[in-house]
Length: 130
Image 1: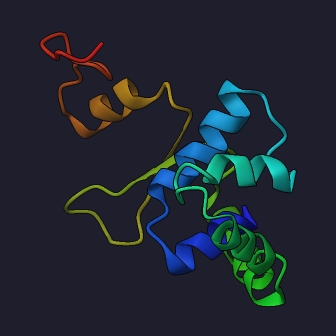
Image 2: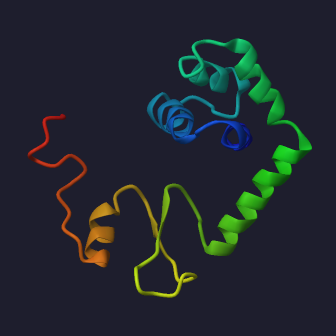
């Protein structure tokens, strides 16, 4: 997570988060606390630029990154986050500080109902993607 924090400070992180968390851990059952696993996961995204990947692995060990990650963690705990994915919803017309937390990737239908929106599934029936 500190590597992702370092990437967030210098890169657009969405694609990296999916690669490290979802693919390496959930799909391939690899130990994402190991530097070689993170390096292998980032290699295709950085065109195998090992020096750039190594710089982010090194940056993740720096006190500044550790402190920023601690602050992110403290904020998540204060907001009631307890796992991933946690989805935070704010409803239009409600106070800006009013948040609703939903936990789990299987909650999209519940979130749609909560917001009064239709839900056609993760891959709509009329989609050409399978």
